[in-house]
Amino acid sequence: MSTGDRLGVREDLVDANRILVRHGILDAFGHVSVRDPDDPSRFLISRNLAPGLVTPDDIQVIGLDGTTADDRPSYLERFIHGEIYRARADVQAVVHSHSASMVPFSISRTPLQAVWHMAGFLGEAVPVFEIRDSVGSSSDLLIRSGSLGADLAATLGGAAVALMRGHGFVAVGDSIPQAVARAVYADLNARAQVTAGQLGGYTALTAEEGAAAAESNNGQLTRAWEIWRANARRGESV
Image 1 (cartoon, rainbow, N blue to C red):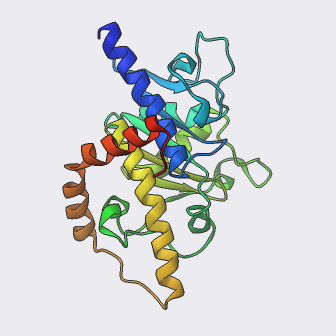
Image 2 (cartoon, one colour):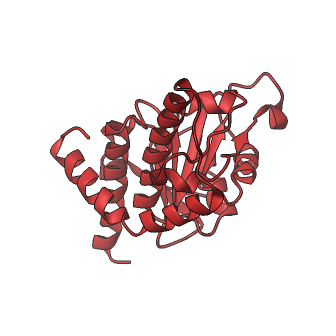
């Protein structure tokens, strides 16, 4: 890959941070990464920094085991990204968020499911990672090790999104635009599902409807990415 192409990937990652902040998916916390296009055993992610402040110079290159030659502090939960990339060769980008819209579905008996065609990728029930099954009931709920990251990746399985009990969620994609769009629309779907429940109930998409909608929307990712990126670069709201 040329130097210009490598810079382009870093700029896309910066744009992703800004887009996710503007959509309320990230705030002072959370992160987004992309698999290194030059080496699938590494990924690119910001140093330990609030997402809205990330610049291309802040991007670190980290191995799947969480190690890096960069001596600046890294995110504590970088293992989320490394272990998902290790488990899923199809995944090229990962978002981790503490969205307050998503957390209720990680702690209730109501499953998060696709109720809106823009979030058909959620399917009939989003899996929930229970960290107590891995480390008991006295952890801080953070993914601080490769073993915890691997357990989270196992819960994610082949899904697009996994909830993390009392913590947040992860969304994955075959590109930065797809992972970003999944994070944004998963959050909006959660809000719609709660609102419909307050009205007396809701009708979820069937598995077949969700798959068909996801396929259609995948063909329109560029449309969303381009306007979101343009707005983020101009400093405009969503």
